[in-house]
Length: 221
Length: 130
Image (cartoon, rainbow over all chains, first blue to last red; front, side):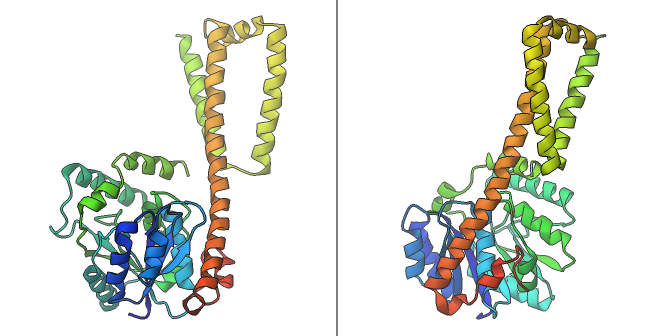
């Protein structure tokens, strides 16, 4: 548990971030929240809950926040694993434990969380359709074969983290991350996760229109 | 049948402009853009002095009127401007992100000295250290 760092991109999640950090820290002590220029008390709440808070001076986007978190985690020589985790309470720590176990048991470098390997995640039909299309596009354009490419829950080992360089600041970073991992000669797998869509996360979640924006950002790079 | 010629020509130009802007950045692309602008300005002067020059070009490629030709040329120019501006903003954003990240990590290293450690050498290369 000491060798695992949770990287949580944080943007205006004052209401929930303290609970999310406390919940993670019951099992994993090392949490870095990358505050992406929040205008509310998110950074202070995360700090009070015991997370390391790295604060972007201006809003840069979730992809940029992840890369900052990776670089912070790399500064701890004892770090062996990075877990990317959402700030809004959608992800479960129990899923992370299973993912880490799978990575160790099967000697994997990266484990992606997937909503579509079991029936626990309840998503709307349109959201499912868009996510499926996103996966199809990602599988078509990268060498990877995944069932869910836009899931924020991932377990990545140190070697791979040090070789990643996310340049897509906004939402297209998920596809970029998969593409970079696909281009490396490493072992990856998928593990079922339960993404909990609460009223809160639904109200904050990204609009399906973003699928169009992501596509444009990926094509015009 | 003559209209096909201008269609082919415009499509080729649009694709060429986009491909050009995608492939190369740097000194050569910048020089070509500046030369293009110079030519454009020179041609503007010529076409002010001799407005009929547009009509002649239009007839040469198979468009009826010179005004249509001007419109098509404008479409191409605007499109290339849009793409160049987008790419330039992307470059700018990348630099600005690196600057902001450096600031954020340096501040965190001061604020959390125990868990942070030595961030300096991580930031030297984009991929970090092994």
